Length: 363
Ligand code: UD1
Image (cartoon, rainbow, N blue to C red; front, top):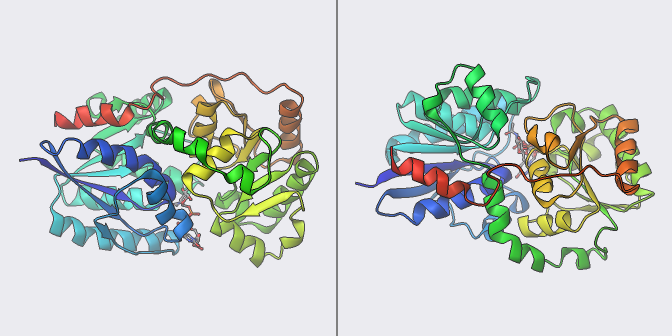
């Protein structure tokens, strides 16, 4: 009997991680019966459906449509919906990805139903428990039976927390599988032409962390810093709905500079081409720190810590927090030809899904 596998996704970054694994699992129908459940944590077309299309992913077998809410509300709604799903589908294995609320909810429900849990992108730690994702990572890892780690820091973190080595596998970064699989299509995106930009003559910014966008003064400060940066280099700003709502709610529309090119959230291929051709990226995202490292595009991360330290130690990433002077100094270094030299981390090679599936075949 094939192993019955249920992959759980909820948000945009989950889809980027699940795509390659779904594809690889379905290449082995003799070993796995694979289904995809979307919790509906992200529901806007640009954050969800567009990604399915860009990544060539099959439609989810089930969509639970939970939507937004406070952390407890959203997590609880996902848990209730997943409990009845797992009870009716009776999977042998539940796979969860990354660190979002849907990830933790899936791990808790599966563990309590005594269903085995695999966590893809395990072991990352920011050591900052004010980040909701850090709580999600810790809970998910401690409930998982198979922990697939993307960078070596994850091995040390899990070992320090007492997780047995036998459960932990260093399989590499599955986001890079997605990037490499779509690179030819990415290069054909016409996003730069649509926005009337020239390669290396613009920067890209993304901003959605609660610590940067949920407080009026902090968000106003970042937008003001961006005015100074945009005076030197146009900045494309695909704006996450959380951030857009807050700019409106706080009345900060006037802080947006004319050189800040505000767009809707972009699809995967458009966003990757935009990144690939940019002079540099400013972000507070996790995944974008990794994509820029792989593409060797300078990245300025407007956070005080990162759960992905390899992007700083050997990749193209520098951390500035949301401090204006540090951000400007980092921009100066890049525009002055002093961007840091970067290499690609170990096992970020496009074969992570294959390595995970080989391990899952043996369970
Ligand atoms: C979530 C993840 C975060 C991840 C991010 C990627 C958690 C705790 N956070 O943050 O780790 O980096 O996704 O994008 O799981 N909204 C819409 N349309 C949507 C989805 C959300 O308008 O399709 C708005 C709603 O106002 C919602 C807010 O965005 O309340 C936040 O959405 P939510 O899913 O709670 O968190 P994100 O900020 O997207």
